[in-house]
Length: 180
Image: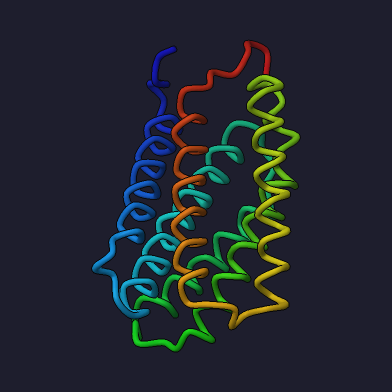
């Protein structure tokens, strides 16, 4: 396997590394309070939004059609990123609801786009499908119990960032079959 030499492969790899590093930073035992959580969620949402809008632009240039769900989640992630980054002293309530909304919207977005990833192989497709259904279930759980625990939210953010990062890194190494 080799890393794709295309801009999409390099961008996916870079976003994956940033997501994994953000998730690992979240597990730091010195991380006290919600300020670092808010800033990491905000910066990650902004980076993810840029990547989603970039992929939508590439898809439009290649195929001539727009992926409206990527545009919508990109705009939502920009709004979430700005809300979480500019005033970082948000309460746990706001962090819980925004994170839950980001979690659910990301899972729904991935589930609507996942049919385009069948070319990557059945294993990768099945893993992504399973991870996104788990993310959707966790999002619904957090929506019904938003104040469950500060620690739970911090660890779920960390796990989400690490899993999303690995998904982007693995996606950077997948080459589409010819004719697609």
